[in-house]
Length: 388
Image 1 (tube, one colour):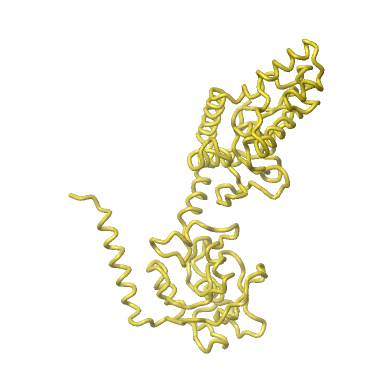
Image 2: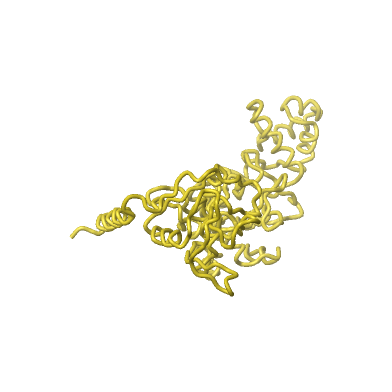
């Protein structure tokens, strides 16, 4: 069966197959084929759709993700082996690695659990094809199942199933190096085919990957890793959200890169900055009979170039909160831009801002900061040019 057809039968789209293919490619490249690809530890936007809130397995769009990842490696349900088994070497319930799962029986599940327990408590030898043959030979020679289970340190029901040849005939043989090589080759081939047959979905995925890795919020500074490519589901900068929770509330135009510098400065030039506890009226443009404020401030996750003045005031004083709505205190004057008077109703865990520690809109010569950044940009560009 074509793995993409398997996705269609599961009521999913070609976009979902592309997400699996691209997620596999990223994990193979960054994590390696032998490690657990635990998605609970990875919240990158390229894994959108995967859910780790279930108590025992990885989900994708509220359905079991394991049949989907097994289909990517060319393995499907059969009547003889109907149960999805997680190998003992796997350390995460939310692992995406297809080599850590296989279709088997309930007995295989019990054996994997025993092998995992033995690895954790005492390094005993797991059941292999050789041991299974010895148990069967001993049983044929007259040894009881109880004696064999004690001799090879297996549970009674495992020894009984071995003697009846219901399972374990070639246990671990399926996971030889040659088998794993074939499995990974099949997985890689399917990923390539899915991406080639869905170019539009790949473009959409690549754009989302670019957004997640390259977009930067206004608080990002060149040469620093933070505030870049770390966004939540509402487009909020997760680095900013962490600093907001630590009480950040400051107004300093020099903290912004030259890309945002003049936009930030021009915004605060349109605000009547008063005392720390007073309202700061908006002096800029309004619309709809002065019922809405209008501030120019393009953002990574907004298609429009203008926002409400309180929203921009929150972004450039406390942090970039993306599509979350910003509100004034009930007793504020219209369009108040005092960061201490702004709040987010959706997130009740954000602390009230501390006293504003600095208002630095005229820090020495404000043009000097821009010129220094401009010289640095020109210097960096010159260094990147190829030598004659």
